[in-house]
Length: 345
Image 1 (cartoon, rainbow, N blue to C red):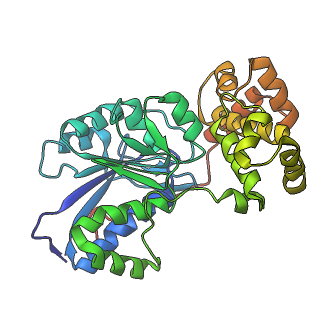
Image 2: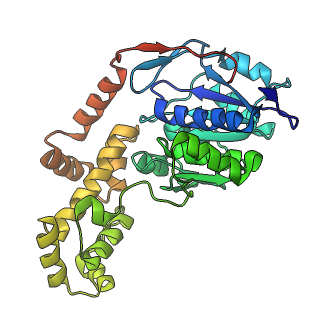
Protein backbone atom coordinates (compact mmCIF):
# COMPACT_ATOMS: atom_id res chain seq x y z
CA UNK A 1 0.00 0.00 0.00
CA UNK A 2 1.07 3.55 -0.67
CA UNK A 3 1.54 6.02 2.15
CA UNK A 4 -1.11 8.69 2.66
CA UNK A 5 -0.53 12.01 0.88
CA UNK A 6 -1.65 13.75 4.07
CA UNK A 7 1.05 12.15 6.20
CA UNK A 8 1.11 9.01 8.27
CA UNK A 9 -0.04 9.17 11.88
CA UNK A 10 2.26 7.23 14.18
CA UNK A 11 0.67 5.58 17.22
CA UNK A 12 2.58 4.37 20.28
CA UNK A 13 0.92 1.72 22.47
CA UNK A 14 2.60 1.26 25.86
CA UNK A 15 1.57 -2.12 27.30
CA UNK A 16 1.49 -2.58 31.06
CA UNK A 17 1.89 -5.95 32.75
CA UNK A 18 -1.37 -7.90 32.60
CA UNK A 19 -2.75 -5.58 29.91
CA UNK A 20 -6.06 -6.36 28.21
CA UNK A 21 -5.21 -8.10 24.95
CA UNK A 22 -8.82 -7.73 23.85
CA UNK A 23 -8.78 -3.94 24.22
CA UNK A 24 -5.43 -3.59 22.46
CA UNK A 25 -6.44 -5.94 19.65
CA UNK A 26 -9.69 -4.02 19.11
CA UNK A 27 -7.82 -0.71 18.77
CA UNK A 28 -5.24 -2.14 16.36
CA UNK A 29 -7.95 -3.83 14.30
CA UNK A 30 -9.56 -0.46 13.63
CA UNK A 31 -6.24 1.07 12.56
CA UNK A 32 -5.42 -1.91 10.35
CA UNK A 33 -8.83 -1.87 8.67
CA UNK A 34 -8.64 1.90 8.21
CA UNK A 35 -5.45 1.35 6.20
CA UNK A 36 -6.92 -1.61 4.33
CA UNK A 37 -10.19 0.04 3.33
CA UNK A 38 -8.43 3.30 2.41
CA UNK A 39 -5.85 1.36 0.36
CA UNK A 40 -3.24 3.72 1.80
CA UNK A 41 -1.14 3.70 4.95
CA UNK A 42 -2.87 6.25 7.14
CA UNK A 43 -1.65 4.83 10.46
CA UNK A 44 1.47 3.09 11.68
CA UNK A 45 1.91 1.81 15.20
CA UNK A 46 4.47 0.36 17.51
CA UNK A 47 4.26 -1.48 20.81
CA UNK A 48 6.26 -0.03 23.70
CA UNK A 49 7.25 -1.80 26.90
CA UNK A 50 9.38 -0.86 29.87
CA UNK A 51 12.50 -2.68 28.67
CA UNK A 52 11.61 -3.35 25.04
CA UNK A 53 11.03 -6.99 25.93
CA UNK A 54 7.80 -8.95 25.74
CA UNK A 55 4.92 -8.35 28.16
CA UNK A 56 2.38 -10.89 29.44
CA UNK A 57 -1.27 -10.00 28.92
CA UNK A 58 -4.09 -10.71 31.37
CA UNK A 59 -5.01 -13.87 29.44
CA UNK A 60 -1.46 -15.21 29.63
CA UNK A 61 -0.40 -14.53 26.04
CA UNK A 62 2.92 -12.75 25.73
CA UNK A 63 3.30 -9.84 23.30
CA UNK A 64 6.67 -8.90 21.82
CA UNK A 65 7.33 -5.13 21.98
CA UNK A 66 9.06 -3.01 19.33
CA UNK A 67 10.85 -0.47 21.51
CA UNK A 68 11.64 0.32 25.14
CA UNK A 69 10.28 3.35 26.96
CA UNK A 70 13.71 4.99 26.76
CA UNK A 71 13.83 4.48 22.98
CA UNK A 72 10.29 5.80 22.66
CA UNK A 73 11.17 8.95 24.58
CA UNK A 74 14.00 9.61 22.08
CA UNK A 75 11.49 9.36 19.21
CA UNK A 76 9.61 12.38 20.59
CA UNK A 77 12.22 14.59 18.92
CA UNK A 78 11.97 12.89 15.52
CA UNK A 79 9.48 12.74 12.67
CA UNK A 80 8.30 9.40 14.09
CA UNK A 81 6.95 10.95 17.28
CA UNK A 82 3.45 9.62 17.96
CA UNK A 83 0.24 11.40 17.10
CA UNK A 84 -1.28 9.53 20.06
CA UNK A 85 0.34 7.83 23.05
CA UNK A 86 -1.90 5.05 24.35
CA UNK A 87 -1.50 3.42 27.77
CA UNK A 88 -2.85 -0.13 27.63
CA UNK A 89 -3.87 -1.43 31.02
CA UNK A 90 -6.01 -4.30 32.14
CA UNK A 91 -8.17 -5.46 34.99
CA UNK A 92 -5.77 -4.48 37.76
CA UNK A 93 -4.81 -1.01 38.99
CA UNK A 94 -1.29 -0.49 37.60
CA UNK A 95 1.78 1.05 39.18
CA UNK A 96 3.80 3.56 37.16
CA UNK A 97 7.15 2.21 36.00
CA UNK A 98 10.39 4.14 35.66
CA UNK A 99 10.23 6.57 32.75
CA UNK A 100 6.54 6.00 32.04
CA UNK A 101 5.24 8.98 34.01
CA UNK A 102 7.94 11.20 32.48
CA UNK A 103 6.99 9.99 29.00
CA UNK A 104 3.27 10.77 29.31
CA UNK A 105 4.11 14.23 30.68
CA UNK A 106 6.52 14.85 27.80
CA UNK A 107 3.82 13.73 25.35
CA UNK A 108 1.40 16.23 26.88
CA UNK A 109 4.01 19.01 26.59
CA UNK A 110 4.40 18.16 22.89
CA UNK A 111 0.59 18.34 22.48
CA UNK A 112 0.39 14.65 21.68
CA UNK A 113 -3.01 13.05 22.24
CA UNK A 114 -3.22 10.74 25.25
CA UNK A 115 -5.24 7.53 25.06
CA UNK A 116 -6.06 5.06 27.81
CA UNK A 117 -7.45 1.53 27.63
CA UNK A 118 -8.98 -0.11 30.72
CA UNK A 119 -6.74 0.33 33.80
CA UNK A 120 -4.30 2.47 31.81
CA UNK A 121 -6.28 5.52 32.93
CA UNK A 122 -4.51 5.47 36.30
CA UNK A 123 -1.11 6.33 34.77
CA UNK A 124 -1.77 9.76 33.19
CA UNK A 125 -4.18 10.62 36.01
CA UNK A 126 -1.41 9.96 38.56
CA UNK A 127 0.91 12.10 36.42
CA UNK A 128 -1.44 15.04 36.99
CA UNK A 129 -2.66 15.31 33.39
CA UNK A 130 -6.06 16.44 32.12
CA UNK A 131 -7.60 17.09 35.54
CA UNK A 132 -10.29 19.29 33.95
CA UNK A 133 -11.52 16.68 31.47
CA UNK A 134 -13.91 13.74 31.49
CA UNK A 135 -12.44 10.25 31.85
CA UNK A 136 -14.14 6.94 31.06
CA UNK A 137 -13.27 4.35 33.70
CA UNK A 138 -14.28 0.69 33.90
CA UNK A 139 -17.03 0.18 36.47
CA UNK A 140 -14.81 -2.16 38.52
CA UNK A 141 -12.07 0.50 38.65
CA UNK A 142 -14.53 3.35 39.21
CA UNK A 143 -14.59 3.37 43.05
CA UNK A 144 -10.78 3.19 43.31
CA UNK A 145 -10.30 5.85 40.62
CA UNK A 146 -12.76 8.21 42.32
CA UNK A 147 -11.09 7.76 45.69
CA UNK A 148 -7.60 8.26 44.20
CA UNK A 149 -8.48 11.25 42.00
CA UNK A 150 -11.55 12.99 43.48
CA UNK A 151 -10.84 16.16 41.47
CA UNK A 152 -11.27 14.32 38.14
CA UNK A 153 -14.67 13.88 36.50
CA UNK A 154 -14.83 10.12 35.92
CA UNK A 155 -17.72 8.45 34.11
CA UNK A 156 -18.91 4.91 33.60
CA UNK A 157 -19.42 5.52 29.89
CA UNK A 158 -17.98 3.17 27.27
CA UNK A 159 -15.49 5.86 26.29
CA UNK A 160 -14.92 9.60 26.46
CA UNK A 161 -13.25 11.90 23.95
CA UNK A 162 -12.52 15.26 25.55
CA UNK A 163 -10.16 17.36 23.46
CA UNK A 164 -6.86 15.50 23.20
CA UNK A 165 -7.80 12.90 25.84
CA UNK A 166 -9.20 9.58 24.60
CA UNK A 167 -10.20 7.20 27.41
CA UNK A 168 -12.17 3.99 27.30
CA UNK A 169 -13.31 1.36 29.77
CA UNK A 170 -11.56 -1.41 27.86
CA UNK A 171 -12.87 -4.50 26.11
CA UNK A 172 -14.90 -3.85 22.98
CA UNK A 173 -15.28 -0.17 23.90
CA UNK A 174 -11.77 0.27 22.51
CA UNK A 175 -13.10 -0.61 19.05
CA UNK A 176 -15.79 2.07 19.26
CA UNK A 177 -13.42 4.76 20.54
CA UNK A 178 -10.91 4.15 17.77
CA UNK A 179 -13.69 4.14 15.18
CA UNK A 180 -14.53 7.63 16.40
CA UNK A 181 -10.84 8.56 16.25
CA UNK A 182 -10.32 7.45 12.62
CA UNK A 183 -13.62 8.97 11.47
CA UNK A 184 -11.93 12.34 10.96
CA UNK A 185 -9.53 10.72 8.47
CA UNK A 186 -11.69 8.14 6.67
CA UNK A 187 -15.16 9.70 7.00
CA UNK A 188 -18.46 7.97 7.72
CA UNK A 189 -18.24 5.92 4.54
CA UNK A 190 -14.89 4.61 5.72
CA UNK A 191 -16.36 3.77 9.12
CA UNK A 192 -19.11 1.77 7.42
CA UNK A 193 -16.53 -0.22 5.46
CA UNK A 194 -14.50 -0.91 8.62
CA UNK A 195 -17.61 -2.08 10.49
CA UNK A 196 -18.60 -4.31 7.58
CA UNK A 197 -15.14 -5.90 7.48
CA UNK A 198 -15.17 -6.45 11.25
CA UNK A 199 -18.80 -7.66 11.18
CA UNK A 200 -19.83 -4.94 13.62
CA UNK A 201 -23.27 -3.44 13.11
CA UNK A 202 -22.60 0.10 14.33
CA UNK A 203 -20.30 2.53 16.09
CA UNK A 204 -21.61 2.91 19.62
CA UNK A 205 -21.71 6.47 21.03
CA UNK A 206 -19.63 7.32 24.12
CA UNK A 207 -22.66 7.85 26.34
CA UNK A 208 -23.77 4.22 26.28
CA UNK A 209 -23.58 2.53 29.66
CA UNK A 210 -21.05 -0.18 30.45
CA UNK A 211 -23.26 -2.38 32.60
CA UNK A 212 -26.59 -3.98 31.87
CA UNK A 213 -29.68 -2.06 33.04
CA UNK A 214 -30.89 -2.90 36.53
CA UNK A 215 -34.01 -4.53 35.09
CA UNK A 216 -31.83 -7.00 33.16
CA UNK A 217 -29.16 -7.57 35.81
CA UNK A 218 -31.55 -8.40 38.63
CA UNK A 219 -34.82 -9.14 36.88
CA UNK A 220 -36.40 -6.10 38.52
CA UNK A 221 -39.65 -5.20 36.79
CA UNK A 222 -41.22 -2.54 39.02
CA UNK A 223 -40.05 1.02 38.20
CA UNK A 224 -40.36 2.09 41.84
CA UNK A 225 -37.79 -0.51 42.89
CA UNK A 226 -35.45 0.64 40.11
CA UNK A 227 -35.73 4.26 41.30
CA UNK A 228 -34.92 3.31 44.88
CA UNK A 229 -31.90 1.23 43.80
CA UNK A 230 -30.61 4.10 41.65
CA UNK A 231 -30.80 6.39 44.70
CA UNK A 232 -28.99 3.80 46.78
CA UNK A 233 -26.17 3.51 44.22
CA UNK A 234 -25.82 7.30 44.17
CA UNK A 235 -25.58 7.52 47.97
CA UNK A 236 -23.13 4.87 49.15
CA UNK A 237 -20.80 7.20 51.07
CA UNK A 238 -23.64 8.64 53.15
CA UNK A 239 -26.46 6.07 53.09
CA UNK A 240 -30.01 7.38 53.22
CA UNK A 241 -32.78 6.00 55.40
CA UNK A 242 -35.61 4.23 53.60
CA UNK A 243 -38.08 6.96 54.55
CA UNK A 244 -35.84 9.34 52.56
CA UNK A 245 -35.62 6.96 49.60
CA UNK A 246 -39.27 5.99 49.31
CA UNK A 247 -40.88 9.36 48.37
CA UNK A 248 -39.12 9.56 44.98
CA UNK A 249 -40.64 6.21 44.05
CA UNK A 250 -44.16 7.41 44.72
CA UNK A 251 -44.78 4.58 47.17
CA UNK A 252 -44.79 4.23 50.93
CA UNK A 253 -42.00 2.66 52.96
CA UNK A 254 -44.10 -0.44 53.62
CA UNK A 255 -44.92 -0.84 49.91
CA UNK A 256 -41.23 -0.56 48.98
CA UNK A 257 -40.27 -3.18 51.57
CA UNK A 258 -42.91 -5.56 50.19
CA UNK A 259 -41.77 -5.03 46.58
CA UNK A 260 -38.10 -5.55 47.45
CA UNK A 261 -38.87 -8.84 49.13
CA UNK A 262 -41.05 -9.98 46.22
CA UNK A 263 -38.55 -9.08 43.48
CA UNK A 264 -35.15 -9.37 45.19
CA UNK A 265 -35.80 -11.72 48.08
CA UNK A 266 -34.40 -9.33 50.69
CA UNK A 267 -35.24 -6.15 52.56
CA UNK A 268 -34.20 -2.72 51.22
CA UNK A 269 -31.79 -2.37 54.15
CA UNK A 270 -30.09 -5.67 53.34
CA UNK A 271 -29.85 -4.83 49.65
CA UNK A 272 -28.37 -1.40 50.47
CA UNK A 273 -25.77 -3.04 52.73
CA UNK A 274 -24.81 -5.46 49.94
CA UNK A 275 -24.30 -2.56 47.50
CA UNK A 276 -21.95 -0.87 49.97
CA UNK A 277 -20.05 -4.10 50.56
CA UNK A 278 -19.70 -4.66 46.80
CA UNK A 279 -18.12 -1.22 46.49
CA UNK A 280 -15.87 -2.11 49.41
CA UNK A 281 -14.80 -5.34 47.72
CA UNK A 282 -13.81 -3.42 44.56
CA UNK A 283 -11.78 -0.95 46.61
CA UNK A 284 -10.10 -3.76 48.54
CA UNK A 285 -9.08 -5.56 45.35
CA UNK A 286 -8.28 -2.60 43.10
CA UNK A 287 -6.79 0.03 45.41
CA UNK A 288 -4.20 0.35 48.14
CA UNK A 289 -6.48 2.41 50.39
CA UNK A 290 -6.26 1.59 54.11
CA UNK A 291 -9.19 -0.47 55.41
CA UNK A 292 -10.51 2.47 57.43
CA UNK A 293 -10.60 4.66 54.32
CA UNK A 294 -12.42 1.93 52.40
CA UNK A 295 -14.92 1.70 55.25
CA UNK A 296 -15.59 5.44 55.21
CA UNK A 297 -15.96 5.44 51.40
CA UNK A 298 -18.69 2.83 51.76
CA UNK A 299 -20.65 4.59 54.49
CA UNK A 300 -19.45 2.61 57.53
CA UNK A 301 -18.80 4.41 60.80
CA UNK A 302 -15.68 2.40 61.66
CA UNK A 303 -13.21 -0.08 60.25
CA UNK A 304 -14.33 -2.75 62.71
CA UNK A 305 -17.99 -2.39 61.68
CA UNK A 306 -16.99 -2.70 58.02
CA UNK A 307 -14.77 -5.73 58.66
CA UNK A 308 -17.49 -7.52 60.64
CA UNK A 309 -20.12 -6.89 57.93
CA UNK A 310 -17.67 -7.83 55.18
CA UNK A 311 -16.69 -11.12 56.82
CA UNK A 312 -20.33 -11.99 57.46
CA UNK A 313 -21.18 -11.43 53.78
CA UNK A 314 -18.09 -12.83 52.02
CA UNK A 315 -16.79 -15.35 54.55
CA UNK A 316 -13.38 -13.66 54.70
CA UNK A 317 -11.99 -10.41 56.07
CA UNK A 318 -11.09 -7.46 53.81
CA UNK A 319 -7.40 -8.05 54.55
CA UNK A 320 -7.67 -11.71 53.56
CA UNK A 321 -9.32 -10.75 50.26
CA UNK A 322 -6.65 -8.13 49.58
CA UNK A 323 -3.83 -10.60 50.22
CA UNK A 324 -5.54 -13.16 47.98
CA UNK A 325 -5.87 -10.58 45.19
CA UNK A 326 -2.19 -9.65 45.51
CA UNK A 327 -1.20 -13.32 45.39
CA UNK A 328 -3.33 -13.88 42.30
CA UNK A 329 -1.73 -10.94 40.48
CA UNK A 330 1.77 -12.19 41.26
CA UNK A 331 1.06 -15.73 40.09
CA UNK A 332 2.60 -16.40 36.65
CA UNK A 333 0.14 -17.26 33.91
CA UNK A 334 0.62 -19.82 31.16
CA UNK A 335 2.50 -18.00 28.42
CA UNK A 336 2.48 -18.05 24.68
CA UNK A 337 4.46 -15.45 22.74
CA UNK A 338 2.73 -13.31 20.13
CA UNK A 339 5.21 -11.94 17.65
CA UNK A 340 4.35 -9.26 15.15
CA UNK A 341 5.99 -7.50 12.26
CA UNK A 342 7.51 -4.14 13.04
CA UNK A 343 5.75 -2.67 10.01
CA UNK A 344 2.05 -1.97 10.12
CA UNK A 345 0.03 -3.72 7.46
